[in-house]
Amino acid sequence: MSALTALSPLDGRYARQAEPLRPIFSEYGLIRRRVLVELRWLEALAAEPGIVEVPTLSADAIGFLRKLGEHFDEARAAEVKAIEATTNHDVKAVEYWIKRQLAQHAELKAVAEFVHFGCTSEDINNLAYALMLKDARETVLVAALTRVLVGLRQLANDHAALPMLSRTHGQTASPTTLGKEIRNVVARIERQFRLLESQPLLGKINGAVGNFNAHVVAYPEVDWPALARAFVESLGLTWNEHTTQIEPHDFVAELADTCRRLGTILIDLCRDVWGYVSLGYFRQARVEGEVGSSTMPHKINPIDFENAEGNFGLANALFGHFAEKLPISRWQRDLTDSTVLRSLGSGFGYLLVGLRSLERGLAKLRPDPARLAEDLDAAWEVLAEAVQTVMRRHGLPEPYERLKALTRGARIDAAAMRGFIEGLTELPEDARARLLALTPGGYTGIAADLARRA
Image (tube, rainbow, N blue to C red; front, side, top):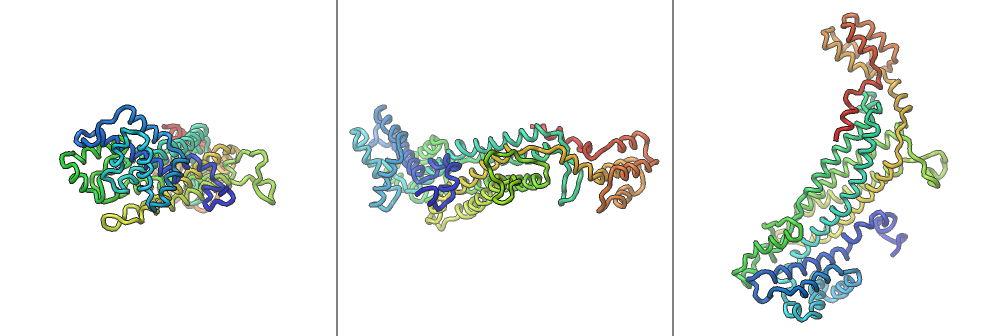
């Protein structure tokens, strides 16, 4: 397979952008984490005094196990796949591969039958997937989101006081600042970011239907829930005590829902920036050699934001399915979750591609103060809100109605607005002077201060 023959764009056109996720969500990544869980479980059994048939391991034996996990590479994953070709069972293939490796170490060879002891395949799989999500979150997503946030915060701070015409319902509205509008998005992303970082990643290792059935028959004196909990937590995960054969995946659904909300916010940002580029509020830096249109040489299209929006949409579609499907399993277990879990990497892959496109797009944005000022100066009607509010304060009759008659559906210039204000002789002189000094570009409230607030 090459980039030209890949079925998925994540392995073709976007292979470079998705590369950091490949060691995590690939088949190799899954097998590697299965191996890690199996090896660590054998260590945990050896550390349990009640399991006398697995004596405390020597430092040499523990070192052997640790190296086996740390040095697990694609070649060794291929060996596991070769075993699977015979077993037709992926987790059993991992067990057999490990036993072959332990045969090289006399101490570990003696306890090889305790590899996968008391486990159903899902004891290994649920922990492997949780570790994959943990690694993806901590090593890839947090970094990618942080880079986007750095770019957005820079825009918000640099242009905190740059006036911009608002457009509620697509119509001229009370002015804001460019920085404040960016800061609004930053606040929304930060909230989802906190939820993403704090989402517990759950795991279980409690046997065929979640009751430690075989464990208790073999070793009734061992406190299996305590041992299992300590083991799961040693992996950096949160123990889930109540499960069937499978960990019910509620936490995966919660994580997917957070990612989907994040994607929706980012789509909203992409569409707004696309619109502001169209209005000329943002110009885009030229990239040497880049072509905007095959026939119109002048164009610099907002392709990064369009690409990001499309990929966020793909990610959201997958995250939506993960959230709706994964928590559902017939009775104590069916296999529908297995094939869906294998596509987790695609959801996060499209999210990552979108984030990288957005990062590139943000780096090219250059606000155009002249264009922003031009639109503000052509929309004096937006001061109607301020005028009628001051009229209300000072008890003038029908302030809203009088401004409505002057401005609704009309474009008002500076002369018309100031002429109306000068006719408000009932206003105190200082209030009227303050209104006469007001311009659309100066009518931004505390937007600049809000834009700078962390």
